[in-house]
Amino acid sequence: MTQRLALKGLGPAGAILAIRAAQRGFHVTAYDPAFDDHSSSPFPGTYGVFSTQIPSWADHLFGPPESLEVVAGTPLTRRTLGFSYRMLNQEAVVEALRSSGVRIKPERLPNGVEAIDCTGAPRTDAALWQLAVGWFLPFGDAPSESTPTFMDWTGTVAQAGVCPPSFCYVQRTDEGWLYEETILAAHCSADVAKQEEVFEVLRVRLADRIGRLGAENVLREELVAIPMGTRRRHKESKFGAAAGFINPATGYSLGHALESADDFLDGQRTGGWLAYLLRQVGGELIARADGAVLQDFFGHFFDLDTQAQLAYLSGRDGLAVARTMWVLRKGTGLRHEFLRPLFRQPWSVGRAVWRRLYSA
Image 1 (cartoon, rainbow, N blue to C red):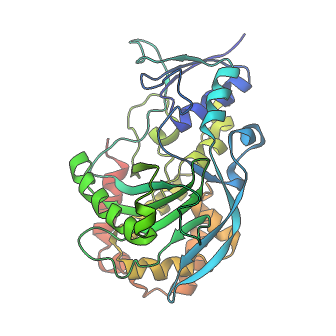
Image 2 (image 1 turned 90 degrees about the vertical axis):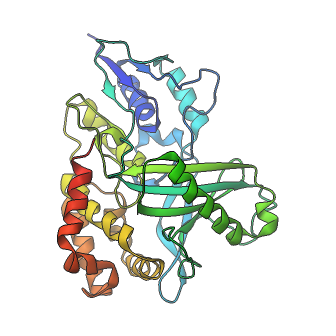
């Protein structure tokens, strides 16, 4: 007998789960009032993942691999990372949804229908927020030194004001170069008007970074507001950000969804609670650090070997995350400013983590 699966929400995680379930012979119905049958982009935003997280069944959904650079440390040092990165091709996702036979209903889930919640993480003041402003620039108008960059902390130390420090993320896309000024993790209100104030500061920083000519030739703007470290508390089945897949120290969740889809469909737990808790602490420390501290800290982090970096950035193995954190302390020392809240304000850090874990 064919197994039936109903999904609520066709964001990145919902789309990935729907495609994989259909590949495995499930009869899939997906409900999402925001889905437009005539659109080539099922959800807003651009998404990238580490190449190591893409299973063979999803390979056709992503663009070619790109090597990544990072600029961090004291003094600032540019280096090439030991892993590659691939951008999600939304047109390929739409084609896969249609060709696999997923029934898409652009409507709300009817009352009484049981479905897997793929609607994303709750937007609450308790969350750590990743906020970013991205500008797509024509290939001919982008800065001449453009190269795919995971983090560029140049200029972070000089950033002033109450807005948290930000770095630049750069990717090559079909539209042109994407330059994104990003606050990695911050305590911020969920209020849209309050977040717009932060976006305004990021626009100024981004314009300063790419120069006047680049800022005058923006093809389009992309805003990012990711609530990190929270999950939906209801007892119904959840997948993706709704289930807490967002890495509370990086804002990434799509890779986790790719790695977990088969386990989820097999009825197995997707795991990773120790890793999630350790990253909650890491995210809280990031939110409390200033630009100089973050620039220096990430210099030490990217001095680690590639396996240790990936264990923290993407892996679900809590012991591997703990090992990375332990090895990292050899470079930073226990007195590094990044770690001081753990010793000076341990109860404050603990309360913030607890509040996120049990909000919404």
